[in-house]
Length: 455
Length: 115
Image 1 (tube, chains in turn blue, red):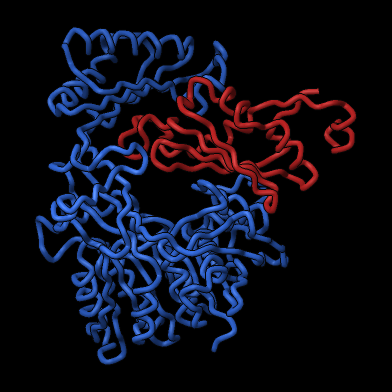
Image 2 (image 1 turned 180 degrees about the vertical axis):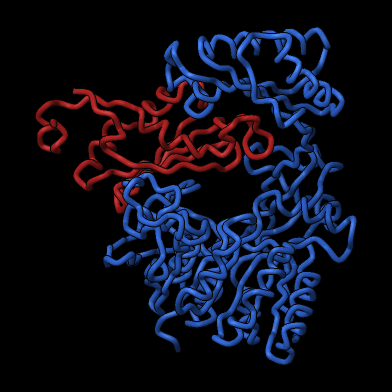
């Protein structure tokens, strides 16, 4: 058994620094590259792509990345685990196989395909059996949005990833898998942790939580002493060095910028945290109040003492549904009396929207430079504030009303308060809203498979 | 004397639907009990008046010298539904650090906050 497994995070979200995974592979020794591509509503975008083209529906960026790094990964036995498969995991795997063949890697690559998360076609059948899929936040039954559902996927844990790795996969591609499972899977595979070794599973889960947002644990978005964090242009993405006993070290490659220390790790531990006593995943329930940290110096923080409890009987399901339209318009007002001008313009705009009889579920005005981030906590601005951006957003079910709103912004330049600019982008765009519906499903409803294809 | 939380703690915030979470971390170990005593859920609810329309929950993480707050109904519907600039609650962390707490001169001196 290896005494140390190095798992490197290459993407904190779909759209993160494109070169980060390449630098993780090239910048020093690693054993696994972990890539998280799926945000909450990404699946619906992929579902739409697949409806237009049955061969699409996955993260294409992943395939071009593979083209860049696959030879080095095979050469150095670096395994890749990614939830890049979206709603077409086998399509993504076929594309990677093509790339491998083009690169002359035929016969040297095994691709693990993890499926079983997609339940879109089973929704009605489940509802008819009394599986309600109520919204976890609002407790509403799914029936209220049934005809607007665009995608539905259960969050899979580490188990099917382990199964793929046990079958010697070099690249494991999943659909909707938890971010933490992508990191925990390799540890279970390497160290042979038992399915009820809750403390170790919780440790691997917490390692996953720390590195799943990429450089947000290694100096990015770090409030503590941010001015002194070195060489952010060359920021290093995190690496979890795991040991068989469930302890691990968070670090980054030598010669990279950013910073890994106790404050940077604490900030990330608390990111998107709910009840710290129970961080629930498909694999276990992790207790964040048991985490101990020790700074080893040299951008190394040791994490130990973690306790976990048995997993629950449920899996979380992410359902996306169409929820109307929105648009946001902005204009910039200059000194003097910039704030007053922006407020006057907002009043004029709202008067015109009223006269047009437009119906919105929600209208929001913010004054950027005054209250867009801290609201009333920011207090009144100085009369001398050099400029203020007026930002008005509307949301509603009627696309025509939202469209009409977008035509009312630019005219304010010639028909409202003076010293105004910032309209160069043209009319605001109308956006279709795809909203997120979190629900729970009994675990027994979901069966996963891990299939291997060879290049 | 009055002290701003920005002098006592650092923070990070994020979202889960329409709920913002703010993790508040003591800059030094000996400051943590002061945060536990003064930065109650009620005080935080009051601080975010007009922003947080629901309940505020607080959790203690003594092992990290940190408190975690959940601010329900704070993000204009949350996620893609929200029209807010900060629909993901990313700046709630620094908004909490604006809060001021009252401490005795003696305690300020003991914690080295009196300069």
